[in-house]
Length: 472
Ligand SMILES: [Zn+2]
Image (spheres, rainbow, N blue to C red):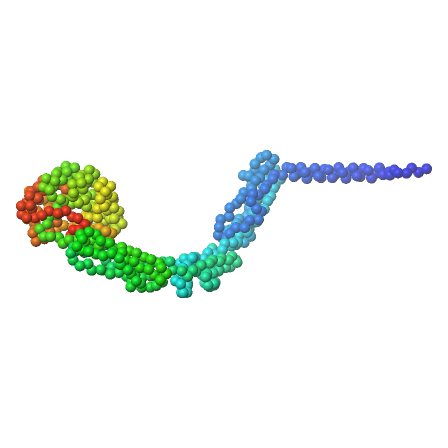
């Protein structure tokens, strides 16, 4: 009888199968071993990178290891990326350990991905006068690869805006917009002939020096200027006129002019003026003498000397004028800015000590000095106008005591001064309160003046300026 349900393999077939399995495991084991024994390399960043032409390619790095050992410094990288030239570059990374090598590859594409730049001349948000057409102010287009693309720019006028478009050879497109609004919000400009500070003599007629007003949209609007304020030259004080104008879109402008009322210098007047101080030992004695004689004088002070002497000058009724802070020619006459910076410093010193906003100045070396030529041609021509425009008055002199030159004794200074005094004019005497012989000559000069019918005055904002001839 035959038995059922049982398959019987021939012995030979069984052996064959075992053999196949053994071989399979051996091969598998071999590859597994190879895999485990091969070092590992992985790339940081992307395996495919895109870099803008002309920029720098920055390698993102890699990580190479063998079990727990770091093999980064054994990695060899082959291939180069030339970012100056568009193209596709390959980088090959490999690391070797024993007979096993690990490899990786990165593809770097260098291409132009940068848009051209368009720069507009004029404003990006432009206002134009109502009812007018915008006139192109110009533009420029530049590309990192193609260079100047200005001629390639397409300009589209879309009524309230203008669209500028340009594409480079790689297809990168830039589009910018200039908006146009019909609106005038710019006020007119008023220009005053002779500036914002003018002078008129007491009791004499005031002549308006004139003005001009111009508007960006309305043009010449001089005839629309309205002046408020009146000049009464009988009043010996500063008077302000206001000039006002409006354009047709109600933009308003206003400027002010100060009319300084001054008096003619009366002949026979003596102005004692002292420069370069204050100084302890001389200025204080000079102040004592002036007090005894009840005479007022003018001090053109600097940054030197004690504060309390400036305070005394002011408190005792003298005029504190400004002579510059440093009194250093190389500093004050370096430039217009440099001069005003130095002047401001001494102005602020005086104001801090006395509370007085002094506008009375004397240039170091006088307005006729030539030393300023060393630093800037034509400087005094500019400065003498500019100080007045800024609300100052300057005073030179017409009588030198000699104390800054060759005379070094009180007697010599006294003789020099009295021999040059004149009843037919004003006598503005240049002296220096830092000199001992000036201090010692002062009493006799005052006594001589009083006995011979002169009268003494201090400079005030109403004193007519004393101007020498300008030589630079
Ligand atoms: Zn001086």
